[in-house]
Image (cartoon, each protein chain N blue to C red):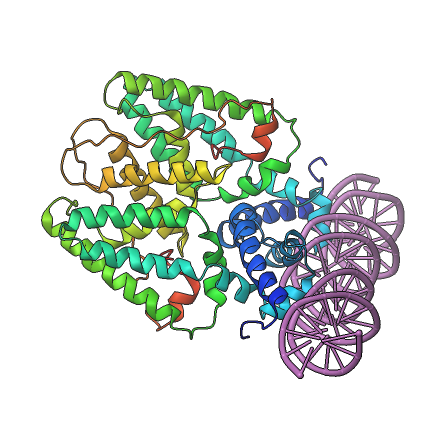
Length: 217
Length: 217
DNA sequence: AGTTAACCGGACCGCACGCTCCGTTACGGT
DNA sequence: ACCGTAACGGAGCGTGCGGTCCGGTTAACT
């Protein structure tokens, strides 16, 4: 599945990837291939000519994500101040996951074990564990913190939904700050990022309620 | 769609509801009706004889949920200590959502607006706002807390996944404690509930990785 | 401009799902 | 024990999905 030689084919390939990213971000990973094709103004067959299947398409569309995550963790580990590194990693991972994270949840389990994907995952996990160990040793990260708590935070972050991508970013930022508050050992209370605005009072009566149940129950 | 008069029919109806609750809790709201029928050892038609459709079935299977949530908030509001009430409400809502919350996310948006469902939701929301106001006034809830942050926590809680329901409950409990830590204004650091165990190191090589991506990326 | 093969798009297939039809079964009152 | 009928179960329908096939189209090279 090498890159196409004709210019229109290359254009199409790029457009498919871009549209796929956007579509998944807005409609979730269950968005039909037909819909992606329609938005890219091409036929379905063209999608399948460029990518073996939906899995492969999404995998390539979001290939930057794992690399980004690994890089974030590495960067945090390189920080001389371990607690600062920990905070940075949490903030950046949450930020990265806030857009285009769902896809891989639905994707990774049925991806071929090769491609060194799993290996990278395990390596990043080990780095994270080391970072946690260091941050805990500084005494700024609470002593009863475990690596699983970080995973917990990332899992929780996935639950976040919001209307616009901007709102989602804002929610993720505030959420990260809140989690850092609870992870911190000391009594410091840091100011929080701006509160998120959610449509608690629907603009149009009943309308918002139906499309955004607010997760109350 | 009144209750059936024959004993076997009543038994079946109960079994369908029980199986549906369990199936949704383990396999998510997308579990096929056929699968529910199979696990209940009955035919598909029997399900549709008792319930008009999938939406109605799930709505009735989880009808206790909204009532429970409302009750929890009322109870919290009745607490003389507003901060304690706030904590209780958060803990209990998270606990309630930990099992059988997804269903309504996928369900509520396409439920008939009648049945006073929306009204109950709005009322509970108002009570929550009042509780937040009181808790903030005591000074134990941080001053920059807003109602949206509570919704945020509930949304985040939905992201939680775990193998067994027990693990999920444990995760929810620890998560709630963490969120309370970040919401608290004072410098107190409370001990946390037990850490959750996640399969960071898979027992069978590669096995866990495929079924539980750990949300790292 | 002409040739060619790479490329395109829409009709099409198989499958899984929600839901229904209809012949069969068995509960419950007499 | 008998019978009427509520209840049952599985075959089958329509739909929407992922993925494929084939006849028309067009970019790129001479």
